[in-house]
Length: 285
Length: 133
Image 1: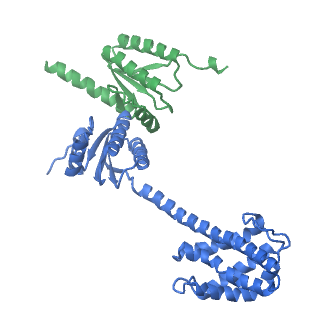
Image 2: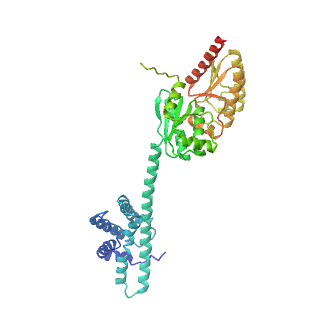
Image 3: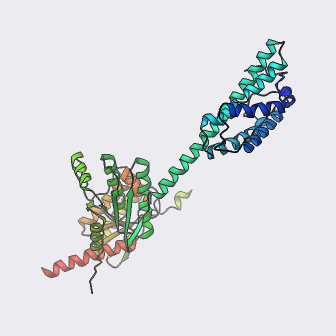
């Protein structure tokens, strides 16, 4: 960590504010992060000016390299806003971090002009500026990743909610159409949803339709059996439907047995079976 | 001091041909022994055809209680009464399955109503068979 006591950087920043800002915006367009196709120049100008103002305010009472401290609160908020704006507008992480990195050149040039005759101070100040700007640049990277993670998490949650609907087909008969690969966490949610639905709809027969499940391996079969056993303990019978010919072959090939679970080729025959079990009959007029 | 307040036995109600018992407290060994004795006596005396065990109040069922339920059902079967366990909660069902206890040979129903229906259907089928013979 460079020695921050008595650094000339804060003073320099506020003295050359206008020059740094102009050079900075020029530098951004030089290295190609000024993406005119993604955001307007006025917006970049606004963000740059705002960031520089906050940076000067944060370093006013001496340089503090701990950017997690209260002193840097405004700068962090500003960076979060800038980064989120870029995430939303399709910038890459590199382009986002370069927003900060491009500030190095203008600052270094000011330092050179200021300390032309004092190489020691020049190197020290340059090092301070580098450390500070690297930290801020990495911070935008963190924010960028966090934004992405949030999106991924939200989508995962939405997918889980979408993927386990329980449909009431008839009095005492519910169906659970499964779509997509069943992994352990999904199988657990499927099981819980199904059992809750059994209680709620007072179902006697539960049809698990696996037409939309691309592959059935031993693990998936085991999940299905567990679900069937749990439903049985609560007093409901499980029927598995939608077993495609290839899946039937795979199941036999794997040596998986489905004892005590009725299996049907499609939902239609499973429904017919369920109606028969609950004693419902239809007659045509 | 709560010890004195806990019931030492579980009440058994008779509804028609059925005996109904509701388990609402954590079962201790001593209580289970009393319950088994009481139930056997009642089945023999009342000629009940069915036993309904309501466990809807139980949050936790361990392997011990699972075995106990299977045990009671076996005793009842020897005395010619079929046992139906009713009202098992989803969480309990999942736990039992994860423990590898699927209570083979014990029948289950969603609630007391359905359990009663199951027993009635059984007894009427049996009566029908006797009638045919």
